Length: 207
Image (spheres, rainbow, N blue to C red):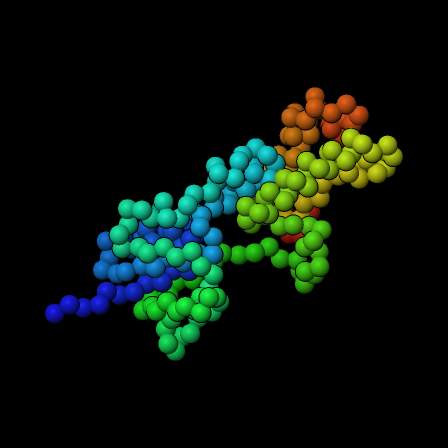
């Protein structure tokens, strides 16, 4: 008599999703790992992509490649639109349903704008590869535009970088921008002194 294996659906192939998948190795379960991106991202190094220290390929790895030796794991590249708890299935945005016995939601977090989502177009966050490449463009273009700016006040504004959040990513990003300005870029520009770049790190907490 055959029994149906316990079906585990894990939504999210970040640190939480991959760690759960790893811990379930050898268990009598069938795992379906779903993520809207086809890569696992090492988020702690996003700031290095944002400051042109690393390429995107150095901090992102295909989920299928990571799971290639796990015959108990099925990887789905899909966007989850909801969960039907009564039917015990995950809803995919193309209309498909993925049934589960146990559901793990490990979808990660997004940056917040304190109720002011209109700020996002002016202040991108740093949670994805797309965020990192957008920030890298903003940072490098700021130096380029400062090089062409003749008004001292406007040039100083171009060379001012404001970071909100003094957690590990904010601190590392602030430090790396300062390092770029003081050590990496000075010899590349003729009209500006990149050492005059100003980095402002804002933190609401007491420390």
